[in-house]
View 1 (cartoon, one colour):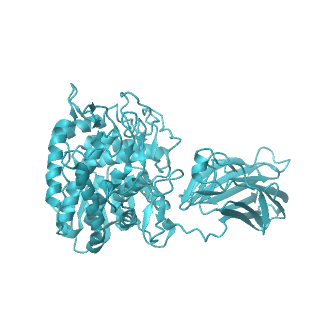
View 2: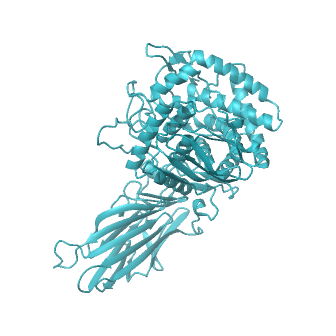
View 3: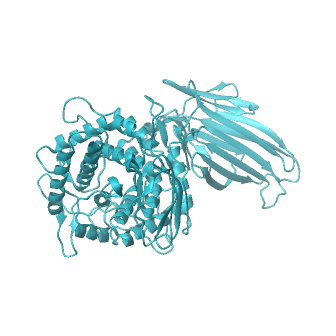
Length: 639
């Protein structure tokens, strides 16, 4: 049970107790302030009967006790615990006994004050000794201290045992409560960016024939808000952390991808993310000049780890160009344009006189996914440069044309089933012919002016074949797209990029298939992902097991997945706006609709989106016809 309102975080099991095992605890900015919080009532642990997330940042636990000797099998005390990501916990006792009760209550507390990285790697160490402080306890370590205060103050405080004690007298039907507050000493109140009065994300809502659509969008937006962080250099700029509990900081490629998927909710998250990352760009001389830095990431069993800095550098101009189409003001676009130009200059310099963008790592494979990112950056970047009268657009388009022509020949593996795109080429030129979910990025071509999709690296026949493969039994688990086809060597249904279903890549595939006109395959993947979302209570994880869906089965959790995850939380926005086929061009004051005519979810309505600086609502009928119900003044429907 993960409560998130970054930089606050609380992790526990469904029992509600914090036993200090694994990741359990209350955190602030990656530091565990409390690892143990065990509640005993009348000397016993309440029997857990319910654990439920009531919001992304709050969880409610219900337990029961039989206290009266003559109570029979029925509990006569209900214990409710409400835990918040900001470190507040409220414990309420309710009596259903026919006579007055005297209930001793004990809370055992402890902490190691460990960093999240130490905990994840098993280097947390033991608990710190406690000291009495006011109405609670305090722990100190090198450079940090934390305390827990209680209201009402406990009758007894035992520092040596980390114990707070109360005795409550409850009349029949009576209640008593305790509030615990966990705080880092010297730090101000925890202020979550996602809880601010002015959110960068619109209050969008969905309606429709398919159960769960409303909850899926609402939960996704709530989770994305819970993951928002402020840039300490410029607190007005907000960006999404990658996910909780493992990745509560800035991951450039994930932040850009999530902000891009969330563009229908407004451009404020995009501009905050772009400004934050612009301040990290390498500006000095050398091969990295112009790059947005990023760590390495596992790429599965057939390719070496990839550099996410390459992906982030190529995503930066794409997000800026598409944010402008959704309504980012021209002066804000122009402010970020020099950073985008440096990203594009890095791209052309890295390619040099060649055709392909190689990895900046030993072995230098040429990944198909990277070529898709680079091609999209060149095409959309050229469009952006032209719009502001900047040089370089012609050279980018000419290189994109050469790449497109070469890729269709050099990266296609012919076989008797119709062929497939190669995942890459080795340094020796050998094709890496395995099929994986990264192929979905070949369908993500980007948005140009006038509601036009940018050209892609595959031709029409190759795109049609890829659509069949992605919806085939080897790739489609029934819940979503496997990271690696089930019939490939090295497939592992729990493999991070070797067979697990990654929600963001499935969403990219659905949107790309829908835009390319392959509605049957898009609808099949979409329905599978919606069924998985329902099984996860509409809070989609970053990934889950790629085991095959069967009658009566359910998707299986991945133990290392972030939940919530920024890209998984933003995925419902992309999925639902792709169904409506919303293609904006705010500078031209037009919006084009290309709805999925097969209406795989029946009628669907989206209201409260943001486009061209105003509210935007659209409805798609069961016949696949789209109708604009609300739009900014002066916005025209494109052809």
